[in-house]
Length: 215
Ligand SMILES: C[S@@+](CC[C@H](N)C(=O)[O-])C[C@H]1O[C@@H](n2cnc3c(N)ncnc32)[C@H](O)[C@@H]1O
Image 1 (cartoon, helix red, strand yellow):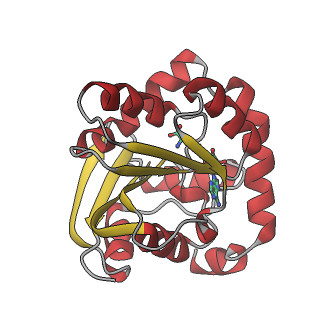
Image 2 (cartoon, protein in one colour):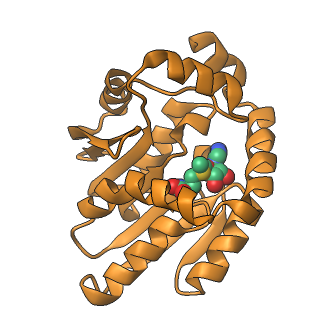
C-alpha cells in the first residue's frame, strides 16, 4: 500500500482521475438517499464546530456540510465565515447554486491550498481523505492553514471489515488508501497535531480530530 501511495503520490494522474470522476458524479450527487448517508457521516464533525470563526471545508463537494453549517451560523454562530475548496468544478458549481455568494468557494487541490498560514479556526474534510494522493502532505496543508489552537477534523470511510477497504480501493475511481483508525491517529501524530480524538461516525466512517498547538 505504501508503494501504491508512493506511485500515486504527487500524481497529476490521480488528480485528473478524481476531477473527472467527481465532475461526472456532480449531477446526481445530491440524490436524497445518498445525501441521507453523507449527512450521517459528517454530523459528528458539525457538532465539533462550537465557536464562531473561519471554517474551511476542503473537498466540500456539492456543499452539504457547509449548507448545514450555514443554517447553524445564522442562528447561533454569527460572525462565522465559511469557505469551501474542491478540485471538481462541477461539484463547486452545484455547491454555489446551493450556498449563494455568502460562502467563499474556490477550486483548489488539498495538496496546495491557496490560503495563508494560520488562517482558519476549523479545517474540515469529509469523505474525501481516501482520494488524496499524498495524505501526509494533505494533512500538513490542512494544519498549515489552521490557526494556532485551531482544529483539524477529518471524517473518512472506515468499514468494520478490513477486506472491504481493499475492495473499495480497487473499485472506486481515484481512491488511494482507506486508513484504519490506528493509521489515521498515527498520521495526525506525525503531523504534530495534539489532543487527538476519534469517534465512529454513523456506520461506516470515523472522525479524527486534532488541535494545532504550535507552528
Ligand atoms: C465523496 S466526495 C465528498 C464531498 C463532501 N465532502 C461530502 O461529504 O459530501 C469527495 C470530494 O473530494 C474531492 N477531491 C478529491 N481529491 C481532491 C483533492 N486532491 N483536492 C481537493 N478536493 C479533492 C472531490 O472532487 C469530491 O468533491
